Image (cartoon, rainbow, N blue to C red; front, side):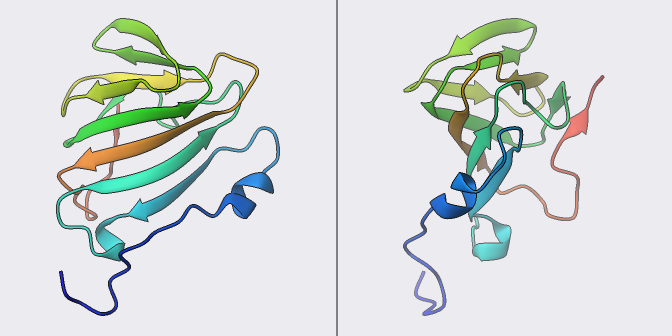
Length: 129
């Protein structure tokens, strides 16, 4: 891409995350349809203790991958439950029911990667519960 307005370097707004209350979840889109993504989206997400998927059990039309950076996230995918520690890569294939939650006393931080880029004219998640 040669567009001079395209941002080749993206950074997490750590000050915004640090200013959160203890029960607040925050997601920062680092690369999305709105910022020029054509094949993949990437978000940095903090989930506080007791928090989880805003949609509960749900599916997407795209593949979704989490890379766990900090904390331990409990994952439910296709009826199976896992605890994902830092360094874990979690794969949610398109159309497969899943959810995530933080059952620990400390925040989890993960990268959320989706491919292809979700259609911005459609809801990102379809709730199943």
